[in-house]
Length: 569
Figure (cartoon, rainbow, N blue to C red):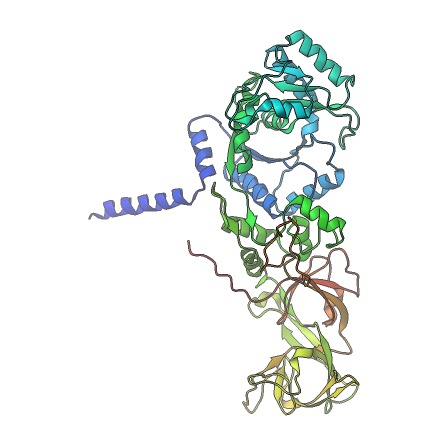
């Protein structure tokens, strides 16, 4: 084979590999650009402001933003606020914060569906004049009865034959507030025999005398989501409406709404992808709302939740979530991602980025009897051996220390290499110490562990070359800062699954453990969202809500060990 042929084959293989690496949405976008359907790409994230965002929304945010960036297009944030019964400014502000935190920069492209209500009203009038929409007197229950079933066609609304003039008059009177809630609707005139129930004369507007979070009392009629959503996209010039598979059956109606008025020469295109499902977590808004209202969690940002605000408060980084979304992939096939993969992503993000500090979560006092009373010395410790750029720090050391209770046993089992009478261990970055005994209270609980130290082992190494099998961490009793440390487990009992047969949640009673700990002195000045690796305990984040200067609160983001293995590609 000639060198030229070999190069061509290798180049083809590389091209095929690149083509294969693209997801199906990117293929469709590139096809649209190549065929001239669109000359640019514009995407958006369009949440309804009726709750807090969760990890599943992160996939949609990052997908839409990533597509816009990849193709040199634009990205916007738009609130689909067409249902005043559940929408609040509180949710608007939280969503804005979450989207910005994830790194999806919408710049000055922030929109509200309600800003288009006048234009939507004009489109509705146009459809009425064209004979494509009519005012119905049927109640919601009657409309459901007339709609038919999956196996039976619907029946025509008795008001379907009203003239355009009569419909225009009634619709204007709906807007003027003449009719009570539920007494009139505006319906599209499409096909009551359609195999797609969404196309059986869907409701476009309903009467609802409600206060709107953004517009106040200006309107008493509100567009339905399936009417408003495609119009918003068309008004803004969105090219690709990227949404989840639950909207696949709504696509014909989406296309009808942007096609039939005849005013959008280049209407947007809807493409669906599979939602992100996470094993053994709670994402449903109604379940989270119940957990909040029943005070099982301490708010929508409780670190045990996978709300974006909860993940942020727990200590997850935007980079770890972006990596998790990337590893989860984009497809049309429904699948679940393992929560352990999200934990893998944050470990990888923090492993070389965090200072490694000492914190004692279940303290018992260690007294070094032959260490001079009143003496304090400063020892040097590297902040992260895997990242020398993080430098080093000085640790105060004295006669009395705090150590972990589990690091001492009076009667140890085999292969226990920590403190027990007669055994020598290394105090990390300090000295070798030999346990001489302990003190107990009236109930038999160990209150003080006693030891002696070898002053020739300063820094944790022996001049005579002797080895010890155990190394334990510690903090100075005189200089340590008291701290609250919160250890989180899954909110759900993983052995039982998420839901009971009655639909209730299988909650893990041990999802939160609060420790009264002692930490290195400099951790007393930790600021919200500062992250650290606590030696032997895991990665921790300074709590953004409850921490105070000199009284820090730390949330465990994730432990140090995992059985998760990154799948091969």
